[in-house]
Image (tube, rainbow over all chains, first blue to last red; front, top):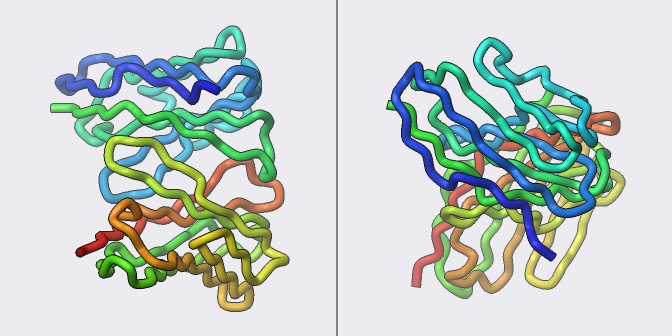
Length: 115
Length: 111
């Protein structure tokens, strides 16, 4: 079974530029998560989708971050414009369904450096 | 309250046991997890425990939960060099979808 795929693996941009990350979850997984992991910290949930609907985006900085999962499969996370403090690893995860009993499977992440 | 705290570093000799500790504040947490993150990789679920349990053993891994003190630990028996990684404690409440993670404990196994 293929795991969660993310691209690109690394991205370096200058502040005020835009960037987009892509995630392909495990086939059949209805729930998709984007986490931000700043160096030295644990992952923090940015947004959660159930199929193509948003379940929780309470910690997403909506003035600059946006995410979509139009067909309920792949998802993109965009930052526009980027700030220095956005430097982090962006992790995508998926689970069969939402809820505590369903394991979240993580992708390898995209490491973003904002200069 | 979703604070999860861990010690940041642990150095252990190969073959010894490692014990990684975690405290959490949310008394309604129903699931507590241990994840492993190797360099350049995503998080891998190692094990989890329900809040109505006080111990769970899975091969070299033993999880102990003290719900009264809100303290969780992970013991790795016969630690190997492949166990060098960052270990994250995480918790989830009964109605929570999201995981709340600690900052991670970096475990270094020395020969």
